[in-house]
Amino acid sequence: MTKKALITGVTGQDGAYLSEFLLGKGYEVHGIKRRSSLFNTDRIDHLYEGPEVTKRKFILHHGDLTDSSSLIRIIQQVQPDEIYNLAAQSHVAVSFEEPEYTANSDALGALRILEAIRILGLEKKTRFYQASTSELFGLVQETPQKETTPFYPRSPYACAKLYAYWITINYREAYGMYACNGILFNHESPVRGETFVTRKITRALARIKLGLQDCLFLGNMSARRDWGHAKDYVEMQWLMLQQDQAEDFVIATGVQYSVRDFVDAAARELGMDIRWEGQGIEEKGYLEPVGAAPSPRISDDSDRGEGAAPTGRVIVAVDPRYFRPTEVETLLGDPSKAKEKLGWTPKITFDELVAEMVREDLKAAERDELVKKHGYKTMDYHE
Ligand code: NDP
Ligand code: GDR
Image (tube, rainbow, N blue to C red; front, side, top):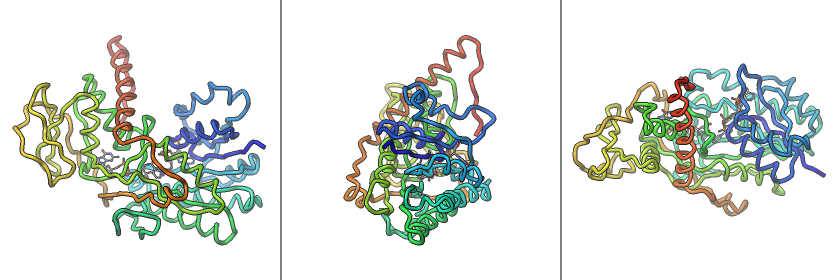
């Protein structure tokens, strides 16, 4: 029997990687996309080009996490073996501006799906995966963070995800459902949303390299994260639903870098050398001319070395607009449980992740350069 999976947030980064992964495993994949005034299927369009579509193995449905009626209708129609709840207003900074909508989609959205499973009598058939997050740890109480580390959410997004985390556990305990949380640390890829910091960096540096942009403006460059690759992480989402018993797992690499380290790594990949000067809001990254003395490598604010004064132009600067009312300064995961029980080992290293993202953004920038050269306007994004 072909297994059926239903993915909410199918048009997002993880939705795209998970769809491809499950189609590769022979699943019939159903995805929920929301209505938008422009096309929003860029990340999954390639899946329509393969044989999956003609065999009707990849099917999209219109629905929304804020609309119970659409969720019940789709789940009733599909009768999925597995539901992956990946849909969310997933931007932490935006959640401070849209707290109520974030709670509606990210907290109540999970509840709506769990209730739909119950209303339709699918508790024993349908397994449920909730996209939980390292943001739950927020103001960290223990380092590294593992499944038993106490939570301390620091944003409306994290507070909404905290509800979703607990309601998933409650439905597991109350109704015997196979429902679990993947507490995933940051994971990125070339199709990461352009306003998350990693993609913002690789896209901007590629454009600066080709003269399409002057400067990259960032917020807190000392923030530290445990960054992995989305392709590795979606495999764990699937594995969590294949166990004898539903359990919650931390998925992380166990290695941490600062935002500034990420800028340095992306610049290196592009053959650019950045020299850092100043502190806090005055901090700037100068593009050193080829052949200049090597810039001191820094991994945090404390080990900044002495070097010659920078002579290049400023290509990275701080814009306080990107500071958050409450920040999550540092996250570092301990994936021991996933290693032991799921056989987790991330295949893609930090350097390979950065290199892939830079490569793809450089190709996109080269396309834009060509378009511009022929007198046409390129697409502008406004954060
Ligand atoms: P994205 O922001 O790339 O994708 C979010 C998806 O949710 C998009 O398909 C979006 O649609 C959809 N969506 C948003 N609101 C609604 C709604 N009201 N109804 C239906 N669909 C909606 O996120 P990622 O793929 O990066 O992350 C997947 C999930 O994992 C999210 O829940 C996120 O919070 C969580 N997570 C992510 C981590 C990461 O580092 N990437 C780490 C830990 C957790 P559209 O395309 O139309 O915008
Ligand atoms: P995060 O990711 O908040 O961890 O949430 P993001 O990339 O937005 O921020 C990471 C860190 O970088 C700092 N930062 C900036 N962030 C953005 N977006 N833009 C900037 O200009 C900038 N400058 C510095 C941030 O302050 C922060 O400390 C992501 C999302 O995918 C969530 O959905 C997911 O749950 C968590 O990862 C795990």
